[in-house]
Structure formats: structure tokens, C-alpha cells
Amino acid sequence: MSARWSRRGFFRLAAALGFGLPAAARAKTGPGKPAATPTWRGRPPLVVCSRGPEWGRPVSEAAWQVLASGGGVLDAVIAGANVVELDPRDDSVGYGGLPNEEGVVQLDSCVMYGPTHDCGAVACLEGIKTPSRVARLVMERTDHMLLVGRGAQRFARAHGFQVENLLTEQARLEWLRWKENLSRDDDWLPPRDGIYRDRQGRRHGTINVLGLDGAGNLAGVTTTSGLSFKIPGRVGDSPIIGAGLYVDNDVGAAGATGRGEEVIRSCASFFVVECMRRGMNPTAACLAACRRIIAINRRNGVTIDFSDKFVAVNKRGQVGCAAVMGSKKKPPLVAWRDGSGFHSQAGPYLLTGRGKNWD
Ligand code: GLY
Image 1: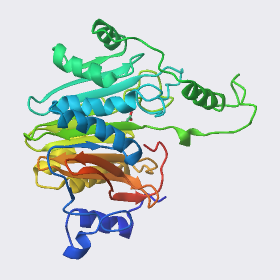
Image 2 (image 1 turned 135 degrees about the vertical axis):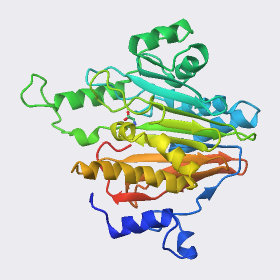
Image 3 (image 1 turned 180 degrees about the vertical axis):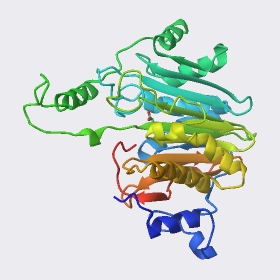
Image 4 (image 1 turned 90 degrees about the horizontal axis):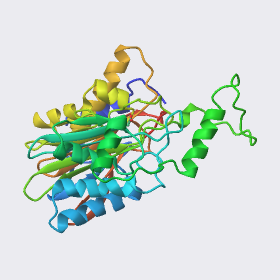
């Protein structure tokens, strides 16, 4: 992995911005090749998911079914997010998410609805499997935008949500292994199998679902269990409007995954949407946010050993994604569903490597 600007990285960026490459080269896409511009075309209505086919297909299919049967675009994106939130096999979102350093699952989510510019969010929410639904209620049934911790849980219970144990056996065992391996100087002895797993294994898994209906209205949702084994109370980008999600009904929508601290301090999803407002296609806008994150860290002399990824859709139904870091084996992926079926596509990245805290 290298944090330096590579020649290839420069050309990827230049290509995504449409500079200096012949039309034929600009039309190529995929890892190791110049980034696509213009980017992939969908045709509204469509729903977009920040995952590859494994989760992207069921998520976007669930969201699409809502849109196709006449449901609202916000109903659709939340239905998509609920697929992952309710499935314990995913250890980074909702039920089954990895806990904080005390073994407690704390969830973050936000929603934003383009036609009204309304938004709602919850952070550090414990015991509720579907934080995205609670975030929506914050938007629709309060005069606030963000509820956290016990207050968020009390609000959810007032609306009939059940408080449940979100820590699956698999997540508990992974947390225990992490805790037992933290230090040789504490009283938690290492596991008998002696398998050591270091902090590289910590993750920021998140999911964004964005939607554009036939009338041109946009909505989005971001949901996560945040950084695994985080300090209790830590909040990442996912429930922060403008960081983990931003929707502007005149322009488009964008969402972020990866290391949330970087996304917050660059207001990255807002930045992606503003780049699209200035005329960039979604891929170029996502790359611009990645470039900004790299520049901020370089200025501080920080070695970049993490990744952030952005997905975006514009008002015309063009879809794009890009990441700070990737590889031929693990490029950033975006999935979407429109009237012609399911689609999944790799996007460009600026630095080659895997990085820790991978999404
Ligand atoms: N992007 C999720 C987090 O950092 O919490």
C-alpha cells in the first residue's frame, strides 16, 4: 500500500474528471483502468446501494419492490436498509453489528427526504434493530433532527419499538477475542487457541441506500453499528447530515462509508452533492471527496491507512462511486436496480491497498 500519489492514481483522477485522455480511454471503466466518464447511466426511477451484489441485490430489490408498487421513495430506501439491519449475518449494521469496547451494540442512522429537505437521525441507539425507522420518526414526529442514547431509545419505545438484545453469539465471541488480545498487562488471558487478531480487524461497515422516483424526487438513508469496539458514545459520520448522507432534490444524493472521522471533517456527502451541482458527474464528484480527504491527511503528515467510499446518484439517474483506497481484487462497488433490472459496477480509487478499518 502506498499513500503517495502514484502515476496511475493521477491518471485515474484525471480521467474521472475528464481531462487529458482521449474519448476512447475515457469510456473505459473498472479497476486498473481509467475511471469512467460519463458514468453509468440508470433511468429513473432507480434505487442505489453502497454494496456489491451480495448485499446490493437483496437491498436494492427490496427497495425497488416498494417503488415499483407505488410506494414513496423514502419508504423504498428504508425498506432496503432494513434488509441488512434485520439480518444478523452482517456484522456492521443493525442486529448482529459488532459492539463497542464494553460489548454493547450502539447503532447510528439518518434519513433525508429531498422534496422537503427534511432529515432525522439517531446515534448511540441501543436495543433497536432498525435505527433507520427510528431516524425517520425523528424526522416526521418531532421538531428535532438528532436524538441520541437513552433519549433515542425512550423515543423509539414510545413509538412501539421493542428493546431487544442485538449482540449475536458471533459478535460476542469476536468482541471477546478482541478484548482478550488487547494487552498482556491486563487480567484478560488470551484465548486458549492462541489466535491473535490485531486491530486491523476493526471495521466501519455501513450501508447507504439512495432512491430517485419517477417524479424526480430523491431520498436517502445511512445506517451502521459504527466502528467495531469503539469507545462507548463514539458517533461516526453515519447519523450526521452532510457527512454520512446528503440529499438535494435539485441535484442528487450521496452517501459515505468507511472511516467516519474523515467524512465528518470534510463534510463529504454534502461536498459530493455540491460537486454535482457544479456539473461533475457522480463518479467525478465522489473522487473529488476522496481527493479532499487525502489532501487533508497529507497536510497533517498522516499516513493514509484507511479508506472511505462514496456513492452518488444525480437527478438524471446517473450513478457513481469512488474510494480513497482499493485494489484490483477489492475495488469500490455500487449496485442499483432500475426498470431494466439489477446492476453492479466497480468504481475508481486513488490509492492502492487494503487499509485498516476497511468498510
Ligand atoms: N462510517 C461509519 C462510521 O465511521 O461509524
